[in-house]
Amino acid sequence: MSDPKFSVIGSGSIGIGWAIVFARAGYQVKVFDIEEAALRNFEIQVKARLELLAENDLLTQSPKEILARIDTTLDLSEALVDADYVQECGPENVEVKRELFTKLAGLTKPDAILASSSSALRPSEFASDISSNERCLVVHPGNPPYLIAIAEVVPAKFTSDAAINTCTQLLTKVGIIPIRVNNEPQGFVFNRLQGAILREAYCLVRDGVISPTDLDLIVTEGLGKRWSIVGPFATSALNVRGGIRAHVARMGKSYFEMGKERGQNDPWDQELVERVASDIENKLPDAQWEKNTEKRDLALMKLNKLFERIVKP
Ligand SMILES: NC(=O)c1ccc[n+]([C@@H]2O[C@H](COP(=O)([O-])OP(=O)(O)OC[C@H]3O[C@@H](n4cnc5c(N)ncnc54)[C@H](O)[C@@H]3O)[C@@H](O)[C@H]2O)c1
View 1 (spheres, protein in one colour):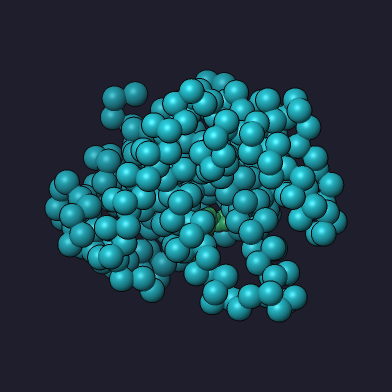
View 2 (tube, helix red, strand yellow):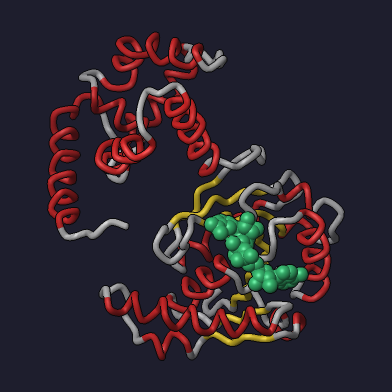
């Protein structure tokens, strides 16, 4: 698809973010909302954010050129008539999404991708009974999507491989890294990880172990800084010479006991550890452990330099 057309349905926080992503990448975007006031606010917000992105050297075109690709409308069929890809950003309510997806299926070209931004509703909860639901799925962004360049691509059993492929190609075209999530887990992956940390954080504060402010500092100055360069699996592989297997041998029991304190019983059995180790080793071979830890450290040095210039909220 050489010149795909995008539609954004719902012009609140996430609709604003997606419209910027699509228009910034050079594509036409039509934005629909049921509220005139929401569309007026959308126009003000998009302009303000584009100007801020430009001030921070994060645009290759002027805000004016990008804004010229975005049209707003209160007419749903007008918003959908040419769309190759629809990003639904309505309220997080299963009835609203079901009703919206029924309309989207009726008003779009038969092969247009129908993606919901839902944070926690599974596609099978709102698109099961919809005709042509092989093109329906969730594409859950980080917030704001024009700064957090990943999105979880969550198909249902009824979503076709062709639709998943077209969707991931279009996301890549607009600069978003598509992350495939299988089996429609509750909360998908982004929020499950966030939730795991938040649940533990609340327990630690409740038990008087740490103050909320200090807990945030452990993340912003410690874990979070490291995780922006290497994820939790890669961190484990680089923290212990010998990679994932050596890390589990040294630390696995301790992590298991911490989980047990919270009523969790999910041992990392050998088959699971092998699956993780062999996948992580593709990128970080154990034989190059020294070289890879040095690369991590160099990236951290650059990040530390950048951090000196960042004013945090
Ligand atoms: N805010 C976040 O951090 C975040 C992050 C990722 C995903 N999401 C998901 O994105 C979706 C939108 O969230 P938001 O934060 O932008 O909400 P929001 O309340 O800011 O915006 C929702 C917009 O939808 C409009 N709307 C209401 N009914 C509609 C309908 N029938 N058709 C079209 N538009 C309608 C409203 O007028 C409003 O402008 C939700 O599913 C949410 O879970 C939100």
